[in-house]
Image 1 (cartoon, rainbow, N blue to C red):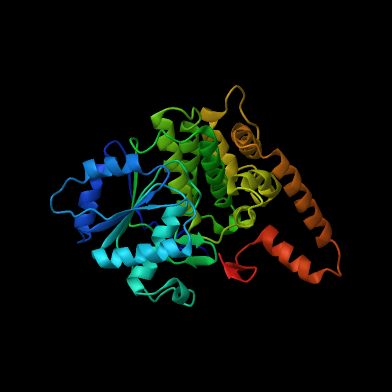
Image 2: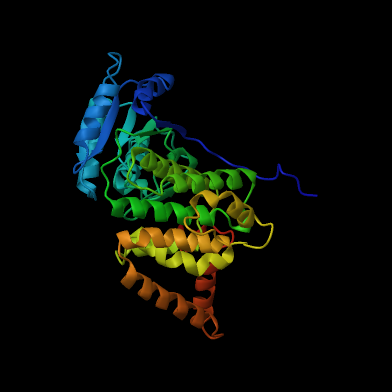
Length: 374
């Protein structure tokens, strides 16, 4: 007989969200016995957050810096220079300011620094061979879906290990309120896709269920998009969805969306928005199911009319965000790809293609697909 205790769940990061959240950073550093963090910041939008951080971390016992500003897509040479600078300055921790690639850079630098390895050497590193430095992530709205996870992806560097979680995630209203609606919509769609994948039958457990409901409530608070409170709610939703998403293998939507992003066919959000409707059949919308019970709780975001089915709710939420990042062409091409995929699956002589596509479409339990760990 199965019991409620037959599952595990890890939520490693401490999350500090709301007013004066930045002021918690000195205490988080002291609690971990460090005092000299290197600061990683976006070259294009980091100066303001750096000033806010300096004001919040005025503790004389802390030696903040050096401050390193990174390009949106840093090259190998820039990463090696950062690693050298960290070694020369004797950094004992990392504070990464902003969302997106910079958080994956922080995770990668943490591995390299902690193990004393170069980029050439790191590819063969076993996942259990390192103990990383304390790492604090200060997030804004430019979410890419990887920030609060135990995963990183930069070019060919792909790692998945619980030590990659940030030790602390900081969400402060003063850091937000700069992203445009395109960035906000992209973050919301990625969060929605990750939360939907958390409702797959084979990965659901009581904690997954409870936290994913919180994601939808956060998204409902974000409906207005323009207030500081709604932006805080969006990043709260993203962090919650990512922590849940880290506890099981990614589903087909996020796998294919990441493949589209890596190939530069589309952004991850555009691909997720186009793919999600095709994979809603994986979710259980039957009477009394988790999604059916969720629908009753979500009347707050039903708008002018209540939904009759939870899948209608998801499609409607997607429709709210899609106009901000124009994915019409992407949607039509991906729709054609999905139709062709199902057509190929019906041919018995395409056994290898059949196996690959079935893995991509159903992806029930394996963490390895197309030859790489996800």
